[in-house]
Image (cartoon, rainbow, N blue to C red; front, side):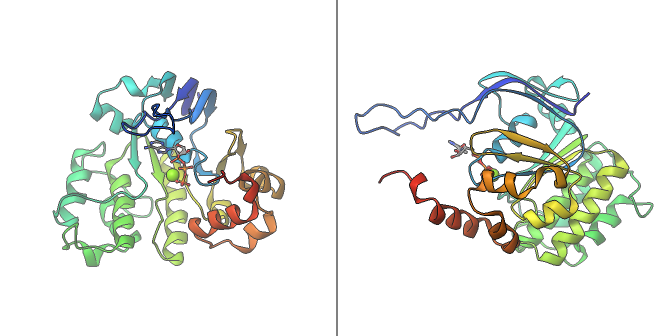
Amino acid sequence: MNFIEFEDVTFSYPPVEGDLDENGNQIVPAAVFEHFSGGIPGAFTSIIGPNGCGKSTLMLLASGRLVPSSGKVRLLGQDIASLGEEQRCLLASVIYQNMEFESNDKVENLLSFVYKNGALKANSKGIKSQDLFSEVVEQFELSSVMNHGLSEISKGENQRILLAFSLLYGSAGIFMDEPMFAMENRQKESALEYLRSYSQETKTPMFLSMHELDLSKKYSEKVLLIHPNKDMSYGTPDEVMTSDELEKAYGIPAAMLKHSEDMTREILSQQSEALSPQKKPNV
Ligand SMILES: Nc1ncnc2c1ncn2[C@@H]1O[C@H](COP(=O)(O)OP(=O)(O)OP(=O)(O)O)[C@@H](O)[C@H]1O
Ligand SMILES: [Mg+2]
């Protein structure tokens, strides 16, 4: 059985009140996915593709945080949108893109609370030691911020706390939307290496959307590439991340993508716009 099953899924974001065209008619957003069916196995998977291709939307649908306009999404065979909140969280946790904490509780309290009240009941081995809690604190270099309030942390620390949070909660599967954003390169590599081992050893499928193609290629077990027209390619990094496929998806020569392995997503999208002015809408 695949971990995720999309069954004839159509999804559009709701119209925004007051968003009118030149004739004063309500603008209705185009569907992001239309009659999409397909299964995605449970693995340490990166989801890649250019800005706006639907990476975040796909993860939010798969984790039941967005509900399809029609069709069904099953996670481990269960209709994810029909579950209550706690059951849904136990099946799939989500690190949202640009997620920040709202409370000013101490980091240590938050992490202990999550570990105790999630699936692991504050009692789990790590993959390198007898105690998962101290292992993730060390792995994500959090010991010096354990006494900080959640609004007294840097962006990179915020991301590392989210990574620790998602493992300590112990969901069956974890969805991470640009989880390494604002982290240093050394920390990204170390986090990816650890997450992949954790995913494989504990059989916890993880899905990460990423813009760092070099890291995605180096660490992913599987890659899902979403093209702007919603065609998808799935397989090992070597199978999917060919020059041809990347060029087709990103609309810029693959050599440029290779040279720009650590380009930020903003630069990437600027380059893509600059190289395909014919695709820009007339304004
Ligand atoms: N809240 C929203 N309301 C309306 N449209 C949205 C909303 N969020 C995303 N969209 C649109 O849905 C499409 C898919 O967006 P999505 O955020 O899934 O892309 P993405 O691949 O995650 O992009 P990025 O790389 O920029 O994070 C885009 O056309 C986007 O403009
Ligand atoms: Mg996104």
